[in-house]
Image 1 (cartoon, rainbow, N blue to C red):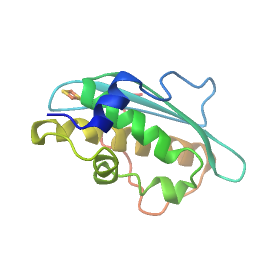
Image 2 (cartoon, rainbow, N blue to C red):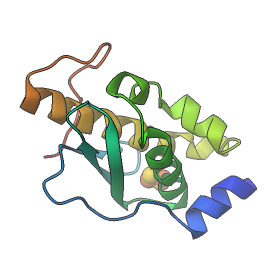
Image 3 (cartoon, protein in one colour):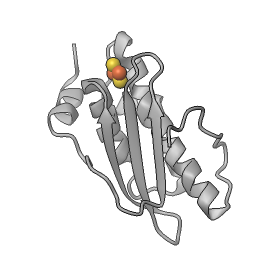
Image 4 (cartoon, helix red, strand yellow):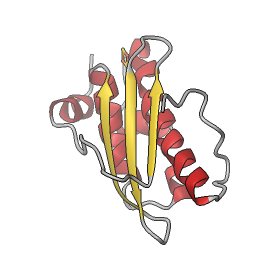
Length: 137
Ligand code: FES
């Protein structure tokens, strides 16, 4: 049912935890199941994402998608991080069962909420980034 990549990230999730004084913090809820995802971004003065951590009250699919999404944004520019969509995350994991696809939305939305938080704090605009629907902060 789950691919080897999903199982690997579920059993050995990368970048779990928090970043003190994060440059950007995003917390979103999944309306379908009520689960919650929080993403912390550490962004340097050149606007490169140096570190990304996550915490979740979510299922295994949410853990796997967030784990791989954190790996995909570390080292990226803000615009490159915008390309880490749930579609890109699903591809990186070789897919999820149809009924678990909604779980992968949490990672994309939480990253974007954290980018929005950073953009607001630094008074910048990130191309294509919209105000998060439901940042729980
Ligand atoms: Fe809630 Fe997967 S069931 S995130």
